[in-house]
Image 1: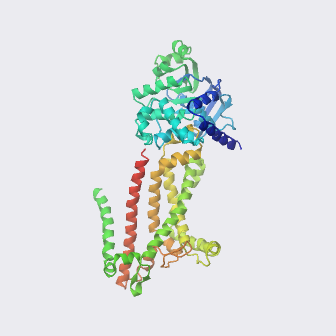
Image 2: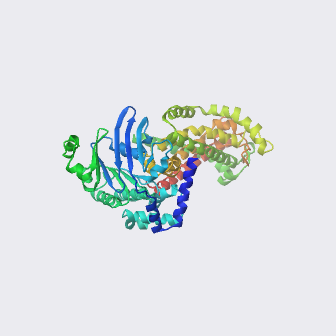
Image 3: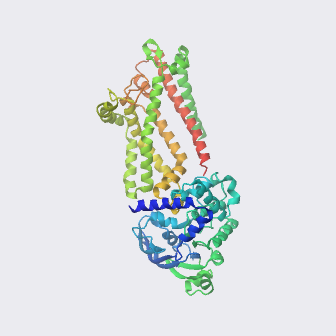
Length: 285
Length: 283
């Protein structure tokens, strides 16, 4: 029953969109975006088999800010990130305790609808994964599965989001050629545009620049800085300098626990915890 | 190693040439076109028309794939994408066992179950009379025979599609089925075609099980409820019995040559198709 209702909701949304245009689209989006859009993580514990991967995590992630999750390898950064859009669900022998509230909705509630959650929270993975189809179809994939059919709307979406990631000029003449033919940096921007095209509130980035060359990496970073005006961005990063450059908030994790969190300024200039100091000064990494 | 590889290539060519030489006798008596397009099969009065056999072979093979492909695609998708790990642990070996059952067992099963079912239950709804030994029975038995192989191959193919694609699609809010039908099937397309080609090649040559249920009647089948007589069955049924007639022996060799040729051409065409698919889905 619920499923039917939400599918209908998607279709209805599609109709709404097809009757409006460019500026109207962004206006409508703006209205849809609740002002108090935040992600609240409360007492989150995650076990895989019997390993305690995340230990009692409490966090608030803000809209229209960049939050960087830092910490040594294997500290649970990625698990934390993947728990925010329930991408960890595919893991076997998984046990989750606690709550993750996205705009007040507990995504681990048994009534929560997983596709709806993921639509609200985009994911940019470590390596770009263009879907096995054309550039155009990659961007419109999300819109299509959510029921948008109008060619006009789809065309507009492709142009808007490719421009948004500064890819339009490079690919506008070959929108229908395979996405895999793009360079890896272009692919990552394409994947970002694809994620944005379903109009999420948040973007999760899992070391999204680590597989890229320095120039492409800077491209993505600049885009994040620009996108912060409209989206909440939560990124896992290995490079402290990257966090220094763009983070508004920083979360430091160690062995599955959040050791310290705060604004970038506080945390980098005046770390409170001994482990944070050591990590920032490069005692371990 | 190079020599061994060369040897297997040589064997292929040798078989082709051998069959061709053996069938020269019949080719000298009848024109190639008459042999391929003739539908009268009266060996004792010197009439050799191969059309019924060729049509029978193609008909039965096509039917078996039409039956096996949808079932095996859905099974493979279910087993790789939906089933929990204990279901996989139970079901995978079952397919291996099914694949290992000798074809004569499938033939007996077809004769005892499928043939009477078609003759008594299914046939009378569509046609006045059918013996049950039909194209349909052959297609069903053959389809079920290639099913386990096709499923195993497809599972293999779906498993090697990187997890990243599933995540990329899911992270955009796609359901599992949307991910399967729009991304995984697409990504796996070259592999699926290759798997189908492999099973069709096997289906072309499958002899015993088909021979037991096809009816062995040399006429072009007009419907699913007519008997048929595929090439392998023709060869297996008559070879050894009719060697006293040189022309007949040559005719059977020619039948083998046609089969050899069909499989060869089919493989070449499918390779070409595969290359094109790989290019158009370039990944």
